[in-house]
Image 1 (tube, rainbow, N blue to C red):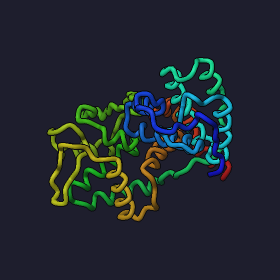
Image 2: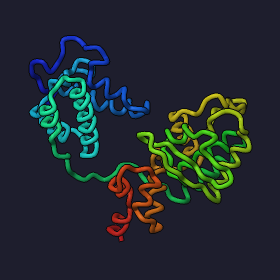
Image 3: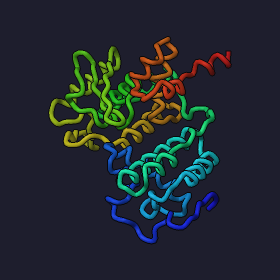
Image 4: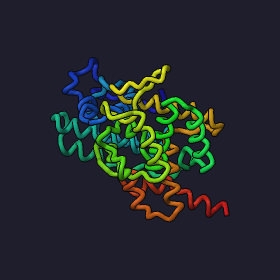
Length: 304
């Protein structure tokens, strides 16, 4: 494998106990399962550069010369955004190695002293046109079963409030006020924010609530082939993904990802002149720079 770093003591002959593995300790410290999966994959990329795996890489033996080489390798393989996310996971694993006493404070400080990988890439994905959004709702409307009403409500909250899939599946009955349309969300890193539904979006969710009833915890639940609701557990993120593919096919809408509905939410707000700082808070972004990547106005200006 190209770009491998080989040095004595970097790769262990056998795995250490999980509570002594800095990478494993860091992953276990993350509250969300989705975050654990993402960061575990980032650390696996680092381990593979050393021709190791997550359990045999000696995180406490990593020094500045290693992290500098890792940075250079990541810059060759990935976009700046992806590479910096992997570097962030590495820094957190090294912090755990320091806290576990596997490296000194000075070695830790030097190892993480790296500049961000710079560059600019065109954001992936696309925005949906208003006609496409309407076509999706019409496809759901043609389905007279409870699933049609539920799916219209899901599309409504993803587009009108910019929810992530994990936020949708985690919505509980107490998170939503049918009268005001207020939604209380818990996003990444357990950060809470509020969103508001109005007009058609609020009506779509309230229509579903009238079918769903008040039993159970989660708003969006499974429906079997006979049309019966299973209120004991929420939908999965994969089920939402599959549903959107199905509705897009029925509506004859060009394929799109679940995140494209969120991208459209942000882009439409910016197009209408909303302040980018406000939009960033509404989307639950950690910083305005993330929101700015969704801004299509510069491209529209170039097109004109």
